Length: 511
Image (cartoon, one colour):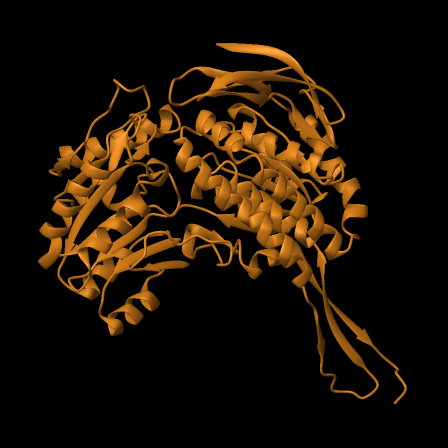
């Protein structure tokens, strides 16, 4: 049951909802955050946020128009005049306060993510800790945005490079990591001295709004962070505005390659700085020298996090012929013993798998599996809906006898589907792995040191997991090659997307 009530929030009363979540109540934000204020859409229109596990509406949030979003852009632009001139130390302190506040509310954010994204509470907590670590990281990196002094070829000149914030950043984020995709981008942007307009995915806007609450509480000035929400019908016009507004200097997007290309075109006329983290289709290669137990553990970590709905999820499992049967049987056993679809029974230590995010995603997964079966794939495990648990649940699935003409051979599944392909040689494995327009992440397992260097260097991806299925961390550069995007997030490289280099030449100096 949903109960409405008024709660005091920050500077003024803001309408919120409280619902029962797990063993406690949780409040749900229901207004957008613009220029330090909580506002509705000027039209008064809203759209529902739905719990994918139950299909029930959690709350309504503002369905903002392009004119509403322009207000947020104007607020960010005005705020940049002062925020862009703050010291790195000042920005560092505020980012750390934001990090500390989120750290004190891990359970609150985990419950929000559980409700709107369908992740288990345990997995949602992992996302909160992981995502918040980017704020910690960039609170420290803010003070390391060094320039340099260049050796001058002329005695009467001195040459310097300095780095300056680029301006207002448009931050467009996906539904699969509703907290981490915002903190990874906004943390870097604020550390660099940029201000932001954040447009979260329409499936998962609540976490973004809750992050804005914490940012306000941490003392981050008004207009520095703005969060706008809108329904699917407005995604195109709002995305175009964020890319083409002359007040926006940087656009950063995580999502599908198809949408990324559209945003790329929109940014062309303004020659915007652009950071894109797009589709994956990651290969997962198991060589005959691999420790099969480690490979299975890595497969579980890489494939089934968020029910397979991550851009770095293992997608095409390439297994050397001599260990193919051993790996498939071991993985099948591990899935049966370690994974549980739906809410875990009390006391269970298995990994809980939740639903897919929406009906469109479920239909895509079902179509890919049915196509493979129709063309001769063998179902080792799963292969069908789990409608008894809810409309969006799909069984963890393992398929063999995969052929090049099948959709699953060529397309990113984005679901709990393991497609097992046999190969005979290292060169064949690399040929299959690299025959793909995407190049985000790749994984392989081998105990042959020479092979490890050869394969790691020849995989056409931006990130490689070597005998490891979980590779993401704030300290490392996250990003891909080919059609998987532009730029890098996290690491010390993450600031570059939000900064400009300026060369300064001092002439006519006295010797």
